[in-house]
Length: 447
Image 1: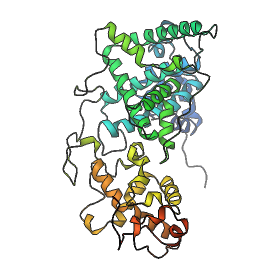
Image 2: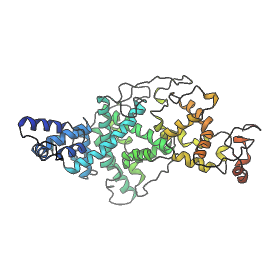
Image 3: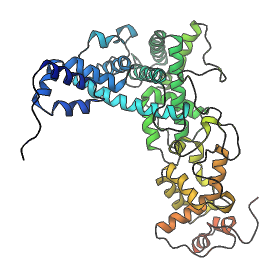
Image 4: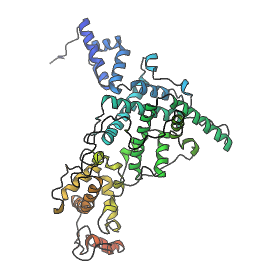
């Protein structure tokens, strides 16, 4: 059989229809596939390349396209440490409407990162029941504009920018830091106060992600410093850390060649200075309506078990994957019953299995080993952190035995004292000889 695809007739109606279809495509991969279907389609694209590419770019990025394009063009042009009036503006999309191939590649990369961050932001700040963004168009536009603006700030005035240091003396460094801070303040002075609040909200969200993946409190000095440094380096790195996190607290590495004075207060100091000039508080009160999100879905939902009002802090199947950003995830060995966390023989293997298991699979797996006391608990429940921690504590040892069996490992005879056995903590031979991942039938519980 021959090729059954009919050639496109070159009428104005057909050409206009094809052009309309091309401008409605969701991304550049679809556009490339479409224009390769026939020479006629390709020729129509060649008649309107700029308008079609711009339309597809808008479909991909959305209303924040001017901010996204400003970021990629400033970064690609390496406009590091320039005064804000020497940077390209949001209107560059009108001044230079033709998109280069480099523009397109950069837009695709950064928009994918920002969209993934929006999905996580929506899950934590808007609606915990969906893993894809549930932000309204207005909310999504605010989030994305703020993220692109923060990313632009990081790219131009962050770790890639020259240090502006003429000498290595303390006085020379102080002058360079002062110049850098003046440039940063000028950048943020261009935004309205509501826009600054949205950028602050995005920064708060990223700091919360970092707190989880590093196993620290969001307010600890360590995580505050690390969050500032990460924004100084690149906000997209936060997503990489989140996606690569293990159950062990991640090591925080600093670039020793960067003087601390260049990144401490990287965003906070200039934003605070701008707000001071406007007689505005540095931060909104915690009980104040927060920026970006207009309405929180399920804000006062109750825990399925204890009925506490936890709202977005409840855990269920749709947000179990985000549990990797919860400090409890980094402390799983300490949730084990009795003295199991000190078991000389098995604790290393237990940690490795937990480390290799995505949090959503681990929590779902625990429900396969429910004890009678938890018979009415369901994996569809929405649990507060305290109830989820309690459930994990009561079932982790059973789940681990199940994992060993699935691996084909032999389970030795149970120790009479089970997980409460003290000998397992200091006699390796005893820890290896008997199974301690079981309930005790003798002895007392640990104090």
